Length: 184
Ligand SMILES: *[C@@H]1O[C@H](CO)[C@@H](O)[C@H](O)[C@H]1NC(C)=O
Image 1 (tube, rainbow, N blue to C red):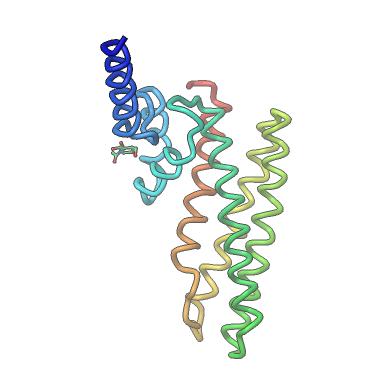
Image 2: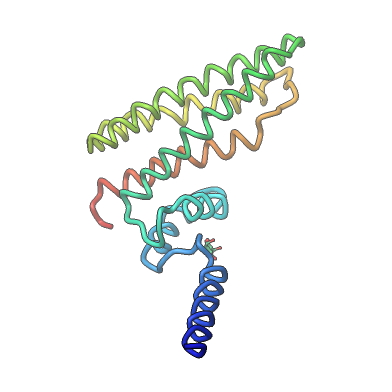
């Protein structure tokens, strides 16, 4: 009796230890290969790899699941950036800064709208429409980058957010192309 409960305690502790030391974010090899196929084409492999790994629902994901993660994360980041920009816009007084923030507010409104459509199309398995709307997003998003590279070059508070949004949109498009090519 005492022995068996000691054994159970040991077994429980071993189980606990293995669940603590197994990185919950790590996925199986097939999933990581799929992630790598997408992320090696991105300007920041690490950001792309982390985004997928941190949002997996288990240790395995197919291209459909990765496409969903990319779309969801693009929407979350775009809404977050839009909110951030609106907050800055409400406080801005310098005309050049206000103008740039207005351009960005508009850019991210468009990206959000496009990705809401992409998400609906994905849910309806209408992947051609999904890619059609996603393909309009890079240009809209880029307007928020371009405005800061245009004289009088106002200080840019959205540099990293723009980079990440650009990568998330590209991840969605590349995952969507993989999904529709049927090669995975
Ligand atoms: C990708 O992310 C996983 C999980 O965090 C990590 O184990 C792996 O080393 C990363 N790949 C590269 C090439 O950094």
